[in-house]
Length: 189
Image (cartoon, rainbow, N blue to C red; front, side):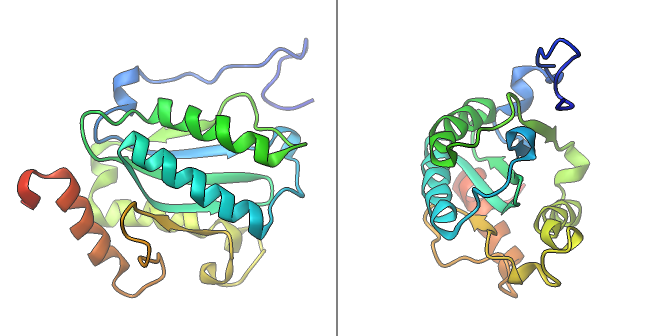
């Protein structure tokens, strides 16, 4: 029996923070798990379709994805809102709705897990450590010895198709883009 169901096979619902915690410039680490930890859905074609759907999600939700990784039985997304109209719960629902048909016959568990980063976790070094944790999943799982060798991970920032997570100057470029999109007139606070 899956861990997300009670003895009568009814789904448990994970507690959520208030809606406002997922809105605006919130930073959230999302984990979407395949029902019963199903495997066999992860292919290069699915990864390409995922990136296309994620791009639509990011644009609609006014979000950035500085790091993601698709694993054989789940996926991780690190998402950042860029303005007051961003709403990650709505955006994740949109992504799940459009991605799940691509996974057939597999489905997502009924509810994703999330961790809304606290203010101290969003400071540059702490945030980059969290992103590193996300992208190191295939290494910790023994799938590859170097994260850059895993074909199913990266970043996605709308308007920056040549930006890659493993570029030497990735974080410098990322923060410059982030500040340009989030601070008035590109000024840092």
